[in-house]
Length: 123
Image (tube, rainbow, N blue to C red):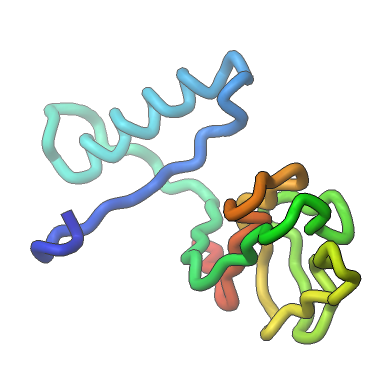
């Protein structure tokens, strides 16, 4: 959609195996449709939230590439903090102060170890 001028949003609703994830996703869809006045429903009340804009990614290039700790989405890091170590021992420092997004501790080769955001929004 973005290629033709529209936009899209990804809403993280929890772990796919959590029983409440489906309910959270359904409520998010209903609330977004109500907010955009696509359905006849009461406007949802504002809530505190976090928004992340993924700006770059760390790729697992070899079997032994790994994150240096069990990060979770929202964990912060400072510029030059080591966030991953490659199989050959090369350290991967953070290029800026930022937030970890979707870290994957057991990433397969040529997939994402993690995404990063330098400027999270707290709305």
